[in-house]
Length: 144
Image (cartoon, rainbow, N blue to C red; front, top):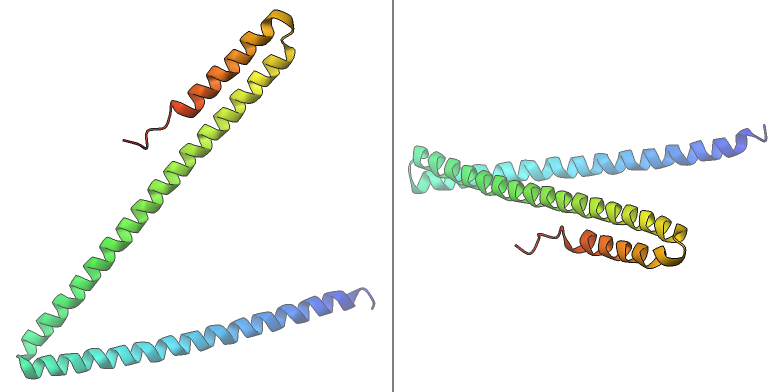
């Protein structure tokens, strides 16, 4: 019985969290539904007003063109944002690959330098320096 008490406390807490999350989701869905109904009535009122100022067909054409324009602008924004995210992911992947190759080159160079004794020490250090230089300055084409 003593072993089940901690589990009962955890499950009780988890069920209360799930219950409160469910209530929050229900509240947000209700608010969104009421807001959507309100927007629908505002659109209907706009149509009625436009139909009184013009013809019903003209009002429908104006509202249809307006909604298509809003959708087009929204689509352009989403495409631009996705393009920027893809470019950022590509740049991050390239930076990660460069960092991994630099670390790999540095560790190989350190292994060479640690084994080099006497006259081979300074050529090993020079090889590490050259590798580091080419690894950090050779692949950066973002300034174009």
